[in-house]
Image (tube, rainbow, N blue to C red; front, side, top):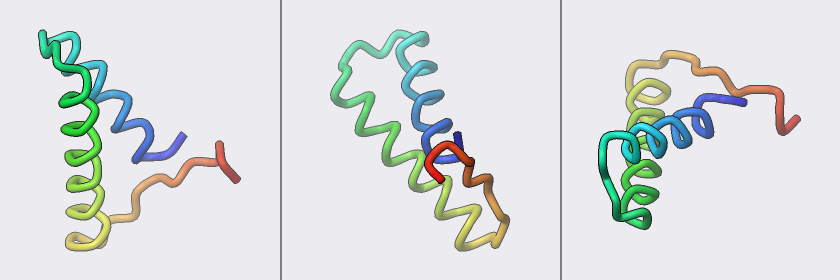
Length: 56
């Protein structure tokens, strides 16, 4: 599935399980956090992240 979609979905599920009820804000936070984590590991630390084969 790849790092970005898996992280995005996991963050949404975890935030909802922990009690966050504002769904729009949850989606925005998940998107921002996924992007920030991707940039940190991929661009700054130069760690290759899984791309997935779902969309190839």
